[in-house]
Image 1 (tube, rainbow, N blue to C red):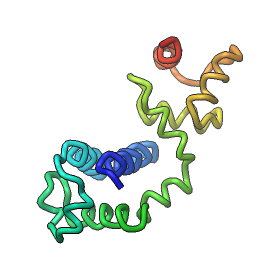
Image 2 (cartoon, rainbow, N blue to C red; image 1 turned 45 degrees about the vertical axis):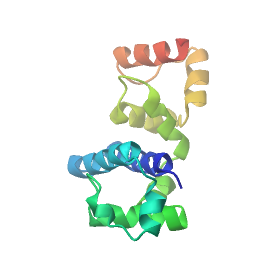
Image 3 (cartoon, one colour; image 1 turned 90 degrees about the vertical axis):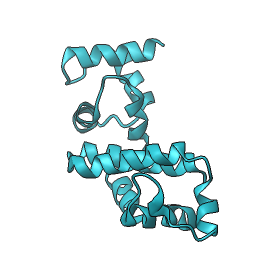
Length: 146
């Protein structure tokens, strides 16, 4: 598993935790770890094979180091699996929309059961209105014009 794939898994955890309105500290810890992993010049797999201490990586503590190891060895970890059981994986792709945060995405999901960019595009093309403030709907429409 590449550093980018591990970072993406951590970004997903941060996103889904934000959807649940979880503790900001926990959300930020996963986001910081993802950033550090993305910027790491050496593959994490190589570090693990060499028996290196992953907690020496900026933003990686004991708990996150274990989750990285689980990702590399097993391909997933318990918290990610639990969040993916609660939310569709495709919901994460909606985080690409600039200026639309997790709370707004959750409202779209919760109200309209829209869980992907494709579903969101079709919904908007149908002419229906989203149950969110107008500025956010405008940002979403701008996203799809690109």
